[in-house]
Length: 130
Image 1 (cartoon, rainbow, N blue to C red):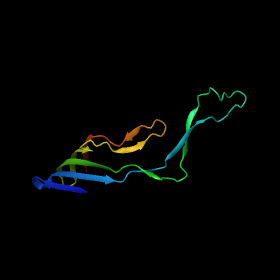
Image 2: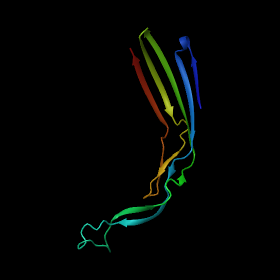
Image 3: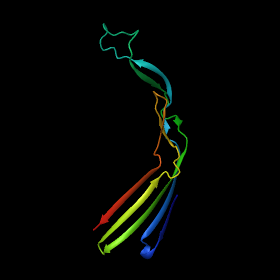
Image 4: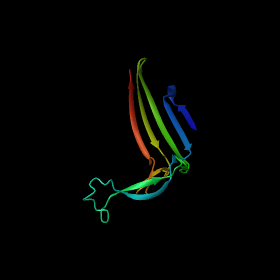
């Protein structure tokens, strides 16, 4: 949902709120782990004490899992200054994820750590049009 309100002389100010909600991303479930030994050198490969990278065994069904729903609120305030018919300056102050909700982005398969989407993220921008 998006709402915008313009106000001030010549409608030079604009305030916007955007609420975004979506379903979680699909993912293929992990079935297990194994040591990923590529056996480069069969005679010198130590299979008993070697410390090899961890490989993953994935489900036969692709994208059979889904992460949880997410939502966030973004807000912005914009001021437009007209210099002439062909030139203007826009100054924008915006905040992404205003209420700092921890929305899941993905889970790292190896470490099993949750990685979230954007935290609260303020930004400032200037646009000169001519």
